[in-house]
Every structure is written in structure tokens, then in C-alpha cells.
Length: 256
Ligand SMILES: [Zn+2]
Image (tube, rainbow, N blue to C red):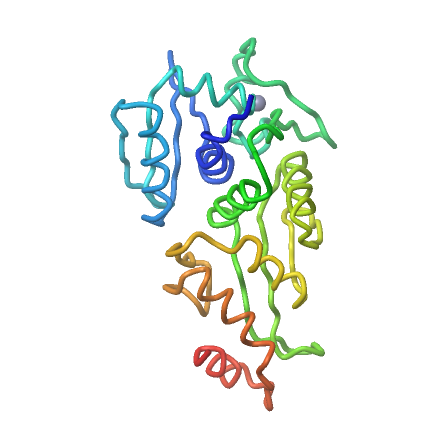
């Protein structure tokens, strides 16, 4: 049976959320700075439960939490775990620490322990669903980037990246990109698109959720939306940079 109705929630939880453990119970959580994504999480949760959504302000953004046993049980039928950082790194996975049974399985790769994560094929009805899933995922855990380069054949570096440390999840995300015929390179902690062809295909077939802004990590483009920066990247291919001076290049890019 298709479980597409959970598609958005699964994508949000795998990227910037997850299932948390408190003493006797479990909760679904999502942390973000983008109101667009926080509202999406709220709206998706509301499709399945009327339980209170708790809100907490943290340095990393706003954390939303909801306690609902049935919803968590349904989500865990889709993916046994939503933990994307290593289970044996701080904070140690409670399943590992307390030797809990019937939670998620562990996979050991080169001394690092990862939880079992799945993005099952029955989450999707068609390619449009896969594109929607990736759009949400990359709006949370991905970014476009364009900045001046010194000592390179190109005046600017252009990157669209999906950040992912979990090796099995990364492989699955790569497969979904391939299903959509978007060429990309698998890096240690990300999937990357750097060439014009790859970035144009990404924009045409996926793109970012409208209104999601760049985070504070972006040196030049803080305050712009991810789609605005993506558009700058595409437009920049038509620009001839007559100087390699960084402030000249940034100025040119700001005008796009
Ligand atoms: Zn674990």
C-alpha cells in the first residue's frame, strides 16, 4: 500500500527532525529557522493528530515537538529510524545506550554505528512525488552557493549540495536523484552538483521550497531565499567577468 500521505513529514523528519526519546515515551521533533518549513511541519502533523505541538526557541532555531504514539508508530513502519547522525557519537543513541529491543537495527561501517533508515519505494506514486520529497529534503539540509574563486579557470564557484552524513541514506538520496535523471557527484558528506548542466537539471526538476531563506552560514547571500540564489547561479552563466577582483564579482552577482 502507498504511504504517500506521509511523504512531506518523512522528508522533514529525516532532514531536520526525528523521533526523540524521553523517559517513558517518544515524540516527533523538527528544528528550523525557516517559518515556511516550520509551518509545513505543523500542517503535516495536523493531518494526523490534534495533540498539542510544543514550541521551544533554541540557538539553532525553533524546535517543534509533538507526542503521538500512533503517528510515530506509522512513521516507524516507513523508516525504522530517523536518526541521521552516528548512533555511537554524542548524544549516544538511546537504543544503543539502553539496549532497547524492537527499536531500530544498527549497521557498523568502519567503526561508526548507523541506524537503519529507509525511504521505501511505496512512499512515492510517481516521479513528481520523488521530486517533492527531494525538494523538501534539500530545502532543509541543502543549499545553493556561488562565490568568487581565486586561482581557478572559473571566476566563480557554483555549487548546489545536499548535505548528508548517513552513508545508507546518502546512497538512497542519490538513487532518487538518478531516478529523476539528475546527474550529481557523491562526496563524503554530501551530494553535489557543480556544472551548468547538473544545476539546470536540478532547478528544472526539483528546486527549493519557495520562501526558504539562506542560513547565517552564507557569507554573501544571507536574507535571500535559496531559490533566489539558485536563480543567480543560473543567470551567472551569461555573465562575463572582466576582473578577478572579489568585490567586483560579488557586485556583479548582486545585480543579477
Ligand atoms: Zn541507534
